[in-house]
Amino acid sequence: MPADSDDDPDDADLEELDLSDAEEAALHDLQLGIEHVHRAYGTLLEFHHQLGHAMDRMSDAEDALREAGHEEWADRLRDDHLPAGAISDQWTYELVEEFSTEFLEEVDEFEGSVREELADGIDHVTERRQKRALRERARRSDSGESPD
Image (tube, rainbow, N blue to C red; front, top):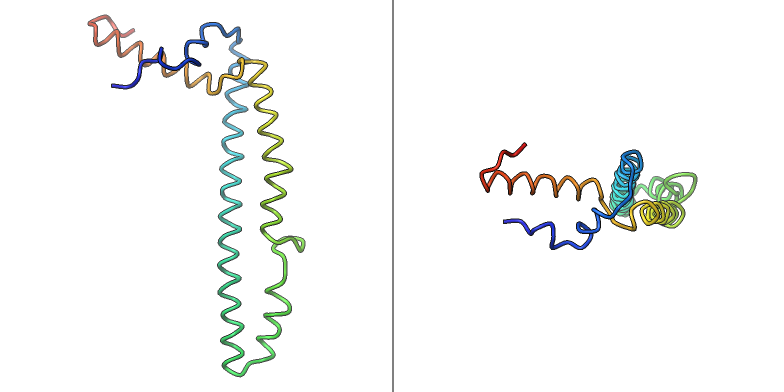
């Protein structure tokens, strides 16, 4: 059986929140947006790792071209493509670092400030309320009461 909602101190604080429906909706949309920003960051990390593996294989190709007697192709690969950045001469680790420090951290701090002011810092207010309502409905059903 899932833990009782009374076991979570944040759930108990929900009753004391003076949060309008519009504020709750805005906070929920902001938090969902933040979750998508984190997913985008994960995708950026995946891009960084995939490109790194690609560059390792291209380095192996340089060695193989050289071994096969194609010094000119190997030199071009070494000089023109392997040291090149992925986007505007930036390497992917630089993109990851910039995204993390100049966007992800700032947007996380912004969301935390909004959540602190609107919901006393309680995270996932909408989901907590939904959990509480579903558990109350299940308890009523278990006790023989009409669920709705």
